[in-house]
Amino acid sequence: MTLGEHLEELRVRLIYSSVVVVLFMGVTLYFGREIHSFLIQPYKSILGPDAHFFQIQLMAPFLIYLKTSLLLSVLVSLPILLSILWGFVAPAVDPKTEKWGKIIILFSTLLFWSGIALCWFTVFEDFLRIFLVVLRPDGVDPYLPIDEYYDLFFNLHLVFGASFQLPIVLILLGRIGLISSKFLLSKWRESVLIIAVVSAVLSPGPDVFSMLMLLVPLSLLYFISAILMRVLEASDKK
Image (cartoon, rainbow, N blue to C red):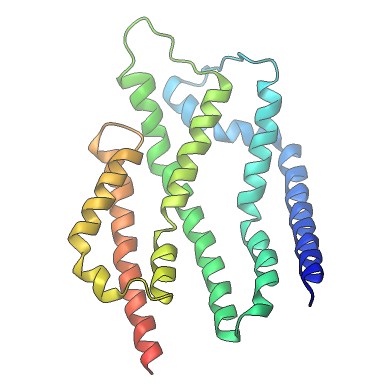
């Protein structure tokens, strides 16, 4: 294929990806009120069922619906989007690499969703409680602007989702020869210390519990990555 034909194929695949996102956006926009009611449950769980938000900007609710719809559509359709884009790269690699590419797409998506689920079930509500209840001085209204709540919601969940890509990054670095399982296992103390520092910076609250919610799973993923790399290295020797 010529360069122009490659660019044309990439354009077509980007169009397909956009169509997928738009279709999912149509569904999420249709159920926008139900999704909003679900996503604000941690807020109401802390401040009570009568808790409300402030609208500071005129178009804030409308923009929030669009932003929420877009982000949820991308997250839900992530494996489809990655598969479409991988189809552009696959013809240029050998069958073994193509197979591993599909496996990486699958596990990368599952890890990303796992990080988001961990944040939703164990971290986000505690984060709100710390700053809206525990650290709130007397005489201060605890209610948030609606756009600030959603910014906090998405930023925190995306941080956890991105952090759970650690095994993918380590295994890819191992496959291209930059690191090895022996190196990871020999430097585990330093690595856990680095993970602890990163967890302390990224954790939502000043309490140890919030830091451990990120430190423990990332440390486990680190050791799992080292084990998987050793298995792959043994397979390569055969």
